[in-house]
Image 1 (cartoon, rainbow, N blue to C red):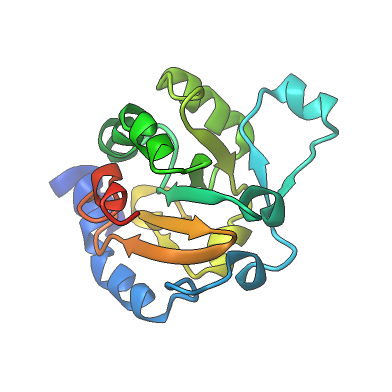
Image 2 (cartoon, rainbow, N blue to C red):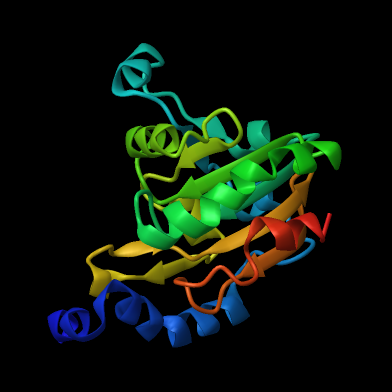
Length: 199
């Protein structure tokens, strides 16, 4: 059945087929304005984008959420995956191109996170020439997104459990605004321009 869906409409038809599930997920997501991300995802760490050799040199270190969010103003956005079409062409570039506007509003970090390993995230960031503007993190086992209930099943596109497409403005770990796409193939509410207007 999944292959028939792919043959008829391609990847984006499969993505659109999960929009109902995403809508249900939105209603029950733990993350919401006022949520303390560190408390909602206890003992969870992310993996900063890096090369394999850098991973070995760091003894495969991870970054606790507290280090990412404490005493900082952060814009963070999640997406289904490195190297996928909408993520590469429509979601990341506007964040990269508007980083100076974010900094002018007092944002300390603009962060991109996905359920990928940090080595794939690193290669993708370099491919997009965005590593100097955006911090990229891998959520290799999905524990961050699962803790916040910001996951979607994209098995129909052979991606498995992935991040929903979302963005948030977070101050000292507290979510001030959260935007989750109804359809993970769209960038309607989670894009850079939207969150710039919310800061």
